[in-house]
Image 1 (tube, chains in turn blue, red):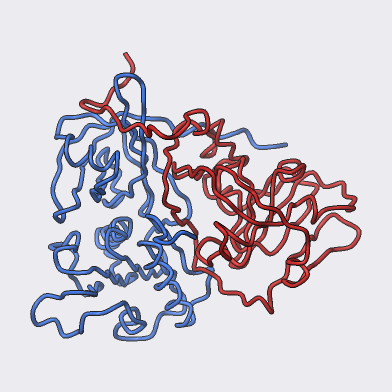
Image 2: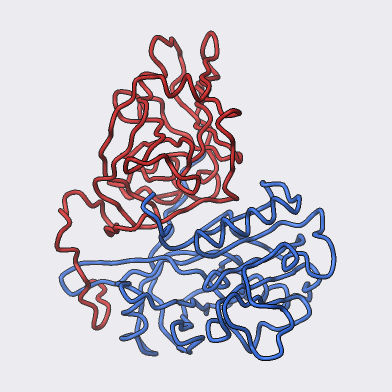
Length: 242
Length: 201
């Protein structure tokens, strides 16, 4: 007997309760549902915009906040100059507005703070990993996590006040703050291993542009991590015609 | 009154034929990349393609043998569940009909399987009859690893996760076996015109 089909994930109306800048190009939108969000760290929501004539545009955005059972959750959105939805969210939306959302979505790139995790984020790819870091810290499981974030320059770092800690490291590829011991440059295997070897029981979560994800995935494979324990989420165009 | 986003008018793509864009999709000229794990790098010397499962004798081709099969140029629109559609993509590949020619099977389902462990499932009838290909070139160039090279499936009438990257074979099955995304919250069939995105849609 086939199982009865699950119910579709419904569209809900969420109220924007706060907006704060993360960088010059990224904002965090705190949204409130009428019931609990029920997301897992790493999942995303779809945001749908509807014009008066019924035209719609929708995009997926990762949740940045830890699951806490509350109706509120946060999406961090990078403003893409040609982005139909991100420009609207950045330039038009104000607290008090309502947005249609659908989710949470995703059953693969998720972490429930039960097993060791190596979180590797490039640029705005840090967003779903931040939900994982926040979950680890909120549940006193920081020892399960190591997080490495790669950004071009200090001005590109999301969550700059909150990120630093014994379990996190920031890698600058173009320009670093004064007195940073590591020379600027692309993410290396040493950046990923940090003080010691990679735990044999770790699962890696890699999120970033396609080029970053390929590079980080290759490094993890070279470090001996089995491919099935490397979970990847990519965004953006490939940057080449093929 | 239906929901309206305050102040939103939208940027309609003036040059895209709306009849070619499934509901909820937008047209992009980029070619975004999606995958669940690291990109495999299988050398062509080690690559082969197999038909296994419910058939009398499994079939297999080395890369040289596969490339010696008749191939064709395919121009199709593709649709990703993450909402982008890309029109008039041009591929070169071998029809699944060619690969299955002469095979007698009672199988009604097929699982595509790939380097890296990815799988995706469909009814067999959804990849036969000129509806699916194993492609090795995109835009006149060898298929890049990030887009599934050396070879990937092309099943353009389904959401693109039903077109497995780094494909290494087809397993013919008498029963339907949900694949990777299909067991991770996504729809079992994935028809973009019916918006079959997630389980329950």
